[in-house]
Amino acid sequence: MFPMVGKKFSAFTLLIVMLIAITGAPAAAQATDAKQPSVDNPHMHVWGTDNIGQCWTHFDRNETTSAVDGYGQKEFADNQQVDVNFNCAMSESFKSDMYLNPNGTIRVDIGIYIQSGDCTDTAECQELRISLMKGSMIVAQQEFATNTYSDEQIIWEIPVADNMTRWNKSFEEPQLQFEYSKPNPADITCVVFDCSGMFRLYYSENSDGLNTEILFPVINASDPIAVGGDDAPPSTGDSGLLPGFGLLAGVGSLAVGAVAASRQHREA
Image (tube, rainbow, N blue to C red; front, side):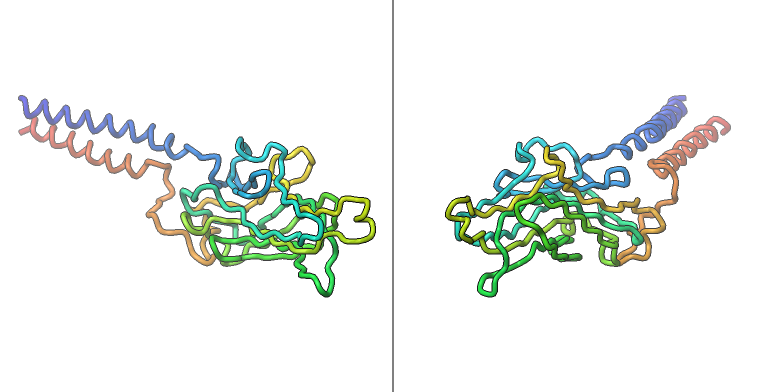
């Protein structure tokens, strides 16, 4: 009698585990991190300190440690070259690979304000150059002619290329690089007016109405359209069933086997 009771108890226990798999697995699969990219969370936001000593990005619109004024700026004394070269990288690694629609477009919106002079034959000169990087590799780069002493809204649309369809976690997170170098303002008016230089980057939350964010055409890794880029999505044996259904099927088979064994024992 006792062996029969034991087998019944085992079957009952397995059925309980099966029910937990049904309810628990989908709930775990639905958990999201606002700082991570997803189909429903495709905008990467830019943040930093008030002097751009640090600049970072993530996919959460909320950030409490970024500059209170909504921008970071570097100031340059009279007769000093207005020269910047800095990167804004992800504040934390991806938890899973990011896949982009190979037929989509990455849209980069950047708000800036610059005070500088014009290029000359004797002065070093670099127009504003923005690079989109995949880890340490530049995948897109563009120079932008900018006005000085006025806010500038930059809009840069980048068609997704073969090497942009998959961004591996831990070492291929996106980052932006900013380069600019021009002489300070220098003319007769500097005798009266302030001719110091400045480079300002507006962050994603600012009160000046400038947009700074990057929109990625994110798709699910299991989406068939992701196949055919530089790297097809890794095979995970996904059958297309609901999350946790594979575990459910496995546990269910064990439970059925235990019940059958118990029935055979009674019939014997």
